[in-house]
Each structure stands twice: as structure tokens, then as C-alpha cells.
Length: 127
View 1: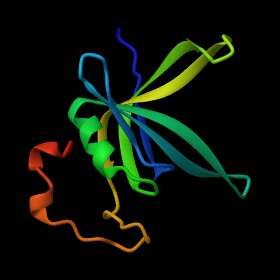
View 2 (view 1 turned 90 degrees about the horizontal axis):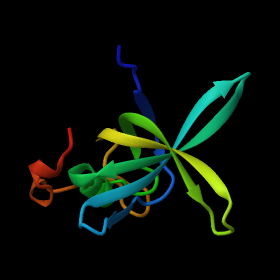
View 3 (view 1 turned 180 degrees about the vertical axis):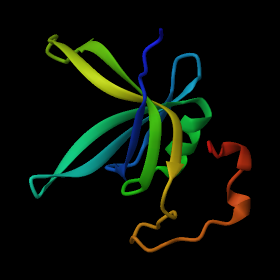
């Protein structure tokens, strides 16, 4: 029987999403997400690295700017790597299968900005 590896997060992006391409040209985006929960009456914040591929990477790279509220669904993966000093490290990353924006697009001052329908190609929307 197969196991289950499913992650669902709702949180806020902590910085603008970084979009780049692999050597073969495949789009990949790195998004940082903060989630909060209450523990003994105090708010505890957790930070997550979310990796998006292909069309989801292109959309999040364009629209997942700092402070956006997003829903992420995917799986958790662990990856080993060497840091700059050559020490072995391990990273936990969420590999996104679905990203949804839960707020409206915001301008730099935090006010709600309107987005014309012509600006967004419907094929770019991952949901």
C-alpha cells in the first residue's frame, strides 16, 4: 500500500518569489511562506520553503510578491546538500502541486490594486 505525503498551508509570503530556469530552461520558483499558530496563548511562526515548477512557477514568480496570502498544496521532500563551508546539511521543502492566491493583488503601498482582465492570460492561472 502506498503512503501519503500531502501538505496544505495557508500563510503569507515573506519576500518576492524568486523565478529562475534550470539549465534545460524549465521554470522553477522559490517562495518563502510564513504560517502562524497559537501555542499556550502565544503566536508561533513557522517558515517554509516552497518550490514551484513549470506554469505554477511562472505564475507565482509573477504574482507571489512579499506579503501575499496564499494557499499551497503539495508534498514535503528532504534534500541533502553541502553549505559554503562544505558541511553536510538537510533542507525540508514543499514541492507545490497547487498555489492559490487568497487576497487581491496589492500595490507597493499596501493598498488594493486593480488588475485588468487583459493583463492575466487565463492559461497562466494554476487553479
